[in-house]
Length: 132
Image (cartoon, rainbow, N blue to C red):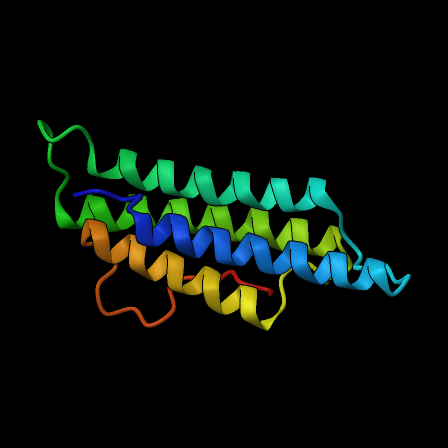
């Protein structure tokens, strides 16, 4: 199973491009978005770390985790990423992750989890920790 497909890459770019566009639009009007390029880059690192962690959950193909192990490890990876995004968004005065980005992030997480067969049946696996 592959965790980072073109769909995930596309979703990630849509999320990050939305943040950049909003920031640039406000700057043209002389306003501050509450975040900058460094925070967008940090968001990308969190997303990339989540996808890498989910790739590691499924292993190298020689060792296959049990469904319970898969779910536990995937849940831990999602929790870590969501908490990191919560902290980042808080540092940006809750301006970095708006509705469109939230929906994109949730879709990316759901899709990546479905790709590895983890946490099936959970409508929003980010909800227990999400503040954005």
